Length: 520
Image: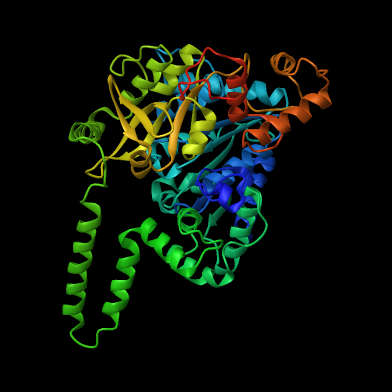
């Protein structure tokens, strides 16, 4: 909305983990060095950091740097028991095992054979687990056993755990002492320091297309007070501030605009801080003052959080959101995936079939988890499962987004569907989503065109560029231009997001999000 006004190519403060926008602060540079060390030298690496500190973005950057002789298993939802964890690792590495009579020993044996074969072919195998604080003690013990897979020269599996600070406390438990001792590199990623916030803002604005400052240096102190240097909150406030400046026709962000943006993003948090600052200055009766402050803060929370967000929908649609959110605890995200599979003309029955992403593999489909916004949804132009929506009661739930136009979105849950305004959807949604995509034949990992050009890409290139000779240089150059056009990380690598956009240009066998032929 505000991009043209400021001369931006895209929104600079999206919360999507786009490696192009990674600002290597002193701490982020050190964290990335630890991850690269783990990849290059083997062993067990631990990266922790607060929510929103940039851990997932660092992981995405690492994946872009991994060499072509590495096989990567990435697990982003580790709430699994030991057997499910082993199965997930085998699935990621394309290790076959008997589905009906699987067991830990069977899968360990198959995985060990696979790793030995990869080692013989001079390939490294890396297991990355994000949100690793959700791993159970039993699953962590299973990971320790995986580190026993080795030759006389080296470990066959390199493991990187990425998680929130409580992961360190979990690993310090007595029963996990042996595992903690095997960690060869560990790093805790703190928030951005005060003196790196201004360079951080300028870096993201430059990537988005402008070089002149929109945020003056005198805004850094209040921005740091509002955010404590947490990149995700910085992004959210700055994005809202740009929207506010656009609405008020200001060429730069003023202190008033920034303060209003912080109030809209943080809700009661900002007012809570102000109240406690006021209470702390009370000269007498501190106990009564604190009690009164708690009561006031509680009232503010009730006012802000118990009231449903404004909506222009009929009560029946709002009641439907209530019901979907209340069913989530019993059914989980399976009903949202049922609606998503239906758009692919696939019947998914959650009570009869395995987990949705595992089930998708039977249809030669893959799941891709993305953090983004409405712009990225439109660019992908695929129906998706939206994660972590909030219904009017504040309950988190999942829905399928199956259709989109300029003003409305159609969302579905199982066999139910309703149409809501885009504004309401953005008020309820926090930017996480999953989509289904079809990989090319024999595709197992991102392909660097500098190392290998697969036959299927040559065919796609020739179909899209009949007047250009399919030489290696032409194809590499064209791919980078294609990535620029589609707002992708420009690396000349055929990763999932690039392939999805290529499929949109070539194939017509998948469903689109936008009904009209508006996709590129």
